[in-house]
Length: 438
Image (tube, rainbow, N blue to C red; front, top):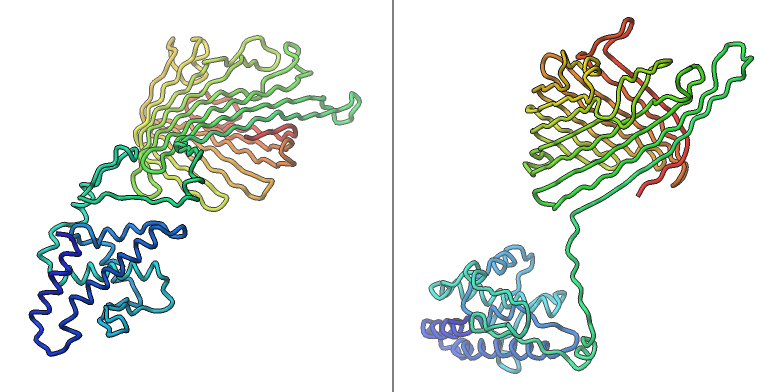
C-alpha cells in the first residue's frame, strides 16, 4: 500500500472517530488531500524547471509505505520543528506553518518527513516495509536502456531544451583511484681538503665523493592494506695519498632493499610482515694491502620479521616503529675466508639466527630547508646484539644544491673485537653538492 493511500485511509478513520460538529474537522480528509495535491503540483512544476532538479524524497509519498531512518533522525535533530495543521484559508485547504527562514526546498522535505512519521504513528500496521528491505531490492543499472521498474516506480528525468543542447557532445571520464605513491631522491656530494707539503703540523690533501639514490613505492588503499617498499644505495670514494697500493679507497658502500606489508589492526597500529636485505657492491681493502675484507654478497644480511607496526604523523614529524618478537636472520658470505669477520665459524658460508628485532624510521622537517631522517634497526638472538643507527641532516640551499651531514653508529658484539676498541663503531661525513628529489 502506498503512503498516499495510507494517509487517505488514516484521514477517513480519524473523521469517523471524531464526533465534533465542526465543519473544518469534518472536511479534514478533503483538506489533507488538497495539501497532497498541492505538493504534487509543486513537484511537477519544479521538475520541469531549469533551476531545480527532481527531488528524490517525493518517492516517500508515492511509493510503498516505508519507514525511513532519516525521517526519524531529521525530526529528532531539528531545532525548530515544522508542523502541519488545518487552516481555513481563502482556498479552504490544509496549510503548512514554517519558519520564514527555511528555504522552499527544505520546507518541502521536512513536510514530507512529517507526513511519513504522522502516518506511521497513526497506522503502524501498514508500515511493514522497512528501509533495509527497500535497499535490498534496489537494482543498479549501467544504462538507461537497461533500466527497469523498481518497486512499481519508473523514474523519469526531464531535460529542458537548453540542458539537452548542453548535454550533446559531453564526454565523461571516470578515473580509477591510484593507491600507489612513488618518490625518489638522488645526490652527488663533494668534499675537498688541501694541505701543502710544508705544512708544519703535517697532513695530506684528500678529495671525497659521495653519491646516493633512494627510491620508494608505497601502496595504501586507505582502509586495510599498506605495502611499503624502498631501495637505498650509497657509494663513496676518497683519495688516499699515503696508501701505496691504491689511489683511492671506498668509505661508503651499501645496497639495501626492504619490503613491509601492513594490515590494519587498531588506530595507528598494524600487523606487519617485513623482509630486509643488505649488502655492498664493490670490494673494500685496508690501507696498504691487496687482501680485500668485504665484497658483493660478502656479507649479505637478510632478515624476516613478524610483529606490530606503529605509524604516526604530527605536523612535520613522521615516525614508524616496528616491533617484531618473531624474527629470523640469515647471514651469508660469498667467500669462506671472509666468514670469520662476521661471526660465521668454521668453513661455513652462512649463519642462521632466531630472535627479535626492532626498526624505527623517522623524518623531521625542522625548518623549510633543514630535514633530519633517522633509521634504527636492531636484532638480538638473546646471546648477541647487532644494532645500527643511521642519521642524515639535509641542509637544502635550493632545489638542486644541499649540504648533507651523515653519521652512522653501529654496535655488534658478535664479531672479533680489535685491540684498543670497543664493540661500538662510528663514521661521519659532511659534504656539499648536487641533490634532487621527485
